[in-house]
Amino acid sequence: MSKKLDLLEAASRVILDKGVNRLTLNAVAQEANVSKGGLLYHYATKDELIKGMNLHVIAGFRKLIEKHVADGYSYHEAYLITTLDSLKKDSTLMGITTSLLASISTNRELLNLWREEYKYLNEKLSEEDYKLEYSLLVKSVCDGLWYSKLFEFGHIDQDDEQKVIDYLLELLKGRD
Image (tube, rainbow, N blue to C red; front, side, top):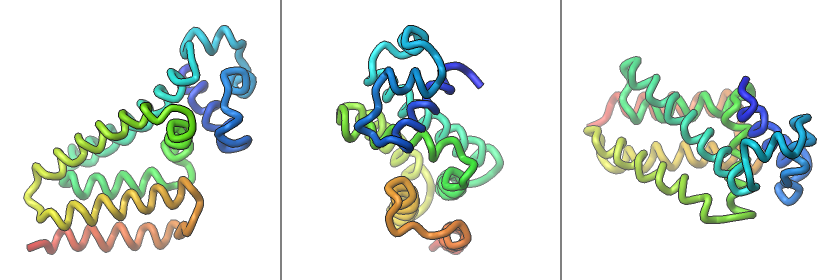
């Protein structure tokens, strides 16, 4: 694992264990067991660290979608499957999505990375021959599952997540 990824995961652990208000460069350096200078070498500011967390999640999620598309799935299907994969307990993406919490509470401009990613997602979904309602349903369900788990409210278990995704995959196959 790279040092940068170690630092991103340490930042995520600080947020998960102590709360987003406790995210400081000192806390991350201590959690990662590196000197503050070692952290500053990779991330000069807290905003840069949070931006790095966001970029890592976005790139990782997009890479997983693209892998499923390369395996023959539509972008809609790949988005559903990747969402399900990212919700699993062993997924590093779900842990680092704490970057969203950090962005919301420290510098909302950092959310622009997510806004751009959603524009990209909308473009990719609109390129396929599905009715708009299917795209809206897929995005709403995926976001709902992800945010429900991230914010720990009303979360459904993994079996039910699988059932919901499977249902939507079947719905996409039988589309008009």
